[in-house]
Length: 73
Image (cartoon, rainbow, N blue to C red; front, side, top):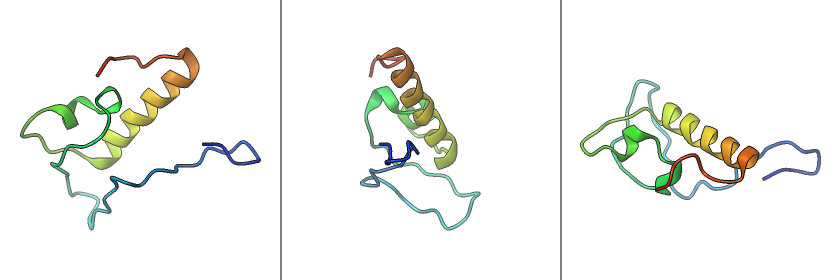
């Protein structure tokens, strides 16, 4: 979403989780498959929330520029 000044705002924290330490990893899986990082989709995988979020942000940027997701979920 964009505010009145055109700044990007994150709006959906429905599946967010705050980690206590930056070295912690996550192992739960939720989200829209086309926007999920490969390590999130992989079974029995632990992943960094930041890196997975960065992947999803890249997918969002790609969709904004091209009009379709780069991968089908």
